[in-house]
Every structure is written in structure tokens, then in C-alpha cells.
Image (cartoon, rainbow, N blue to C red; front, side, top):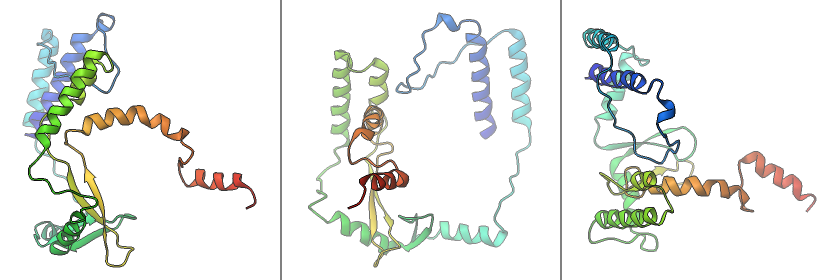
Length: 230
């Protein structure tokens, strides 16, 4: 399967190179990243290219599978596999540092439910609003496109397809008593993912102009030095 996928990708790139060779000035290409990925597949090229593709495809599909060497010892790999298949634990990265935290699943779920029960922050819904959110975004980007505020490519890029609700999880704060969790809402694959990416692209250059903006620790120390004696 991996060989077939690799072959398909390579063949497409070769035919694209052949199709567009010497025609660069005949096509208008947008350099914006806010556009759907092209699925254009050119037809077969000349006989020499197709002969090369035929030989290349045969060699790739008939090549023996690569055997990768693990950087784990056998006991380490077996222990890792045992942990992966253990249903009563949760493995997460720590909120601070690069530590890996192994938590009892029930303890992790209790912490998530404790935070979600805070009615001042979260509201329990009677049904999944994803479909309604998708419709609202589609209508919004359609109006913006018709108005000329965004391009058609941007409208296609931000229109949600095959979406799912955003997901809630917590990262354990091992440096604090009781190991509370830092809440995170993952928007990957959610209806607003691409729309947020577009908005962030235009807002990000404006952030450094905010008086309270700190680029990093060195920027913070520089601001302290500029304050002078207190």
C-alpha cells in the first residue's frame, strides 16, 4: 500500500512537470496559501516519459519492504506496547517541560468532568451544534466572497468540509499540588479551523504593536531595563 501511494504521487509530479514545462507564462498561479489543494491530474505524457514511469512503477512495486531498526530494545518495545494497550491509563505530555505523564484513566476523567462542570465557563448543550455552525460559516464566506472582501480561493479554503466538533482535553500540571489539568480545546478538523487560520494570518502582524505585547523573555528583560530606576 505504501509503495502504491508513493508511486501515485511520484507519477503525478512527473506528469505535472512535463505538462507545464515551457508553459509557465501561459498560466496564472496564485501564491496564496489560502486555497484548496489542486487535484489536477494531467494525462499521459510522451512515450519516453511513460516508458520511464512504467519502469519506475514496476521497480517500486516489486521492491522488498524496508525493515526499519527500532531505537528501543526488545524489553523497552514490549513495555511500550503494553502501555499502549492498557485501557485504564492515559498518557499525556505535561503542561510544562517535556515530561510524559501516565495517569489513571478514572483520575483523568474526573479532572475533565470537574472542569466541565464549571457553569461559569462551560454550558451544557442539548444537541450537537456543528451542523448549524457549518451552515453559518458557509453563508458568511459566501457573502464575503460576493462582496469582494475575500477571494473565491479563500472562500473555498474556509468553507468547512468533513468537520467534527472541537475536542476538549487537559494537560496535567505536575508542578502543582493535586496535579490539576490545563484545559485545551483542539480545533483541528473543526468547522472554524481554516477560518481561524485565515483571520490569524491577518491579525498576527498587528500584535507586536500592542503595548502589552512581549515577544519573548529577552524582550521582557529589555523592557525592564528601559524602565530605569523605580
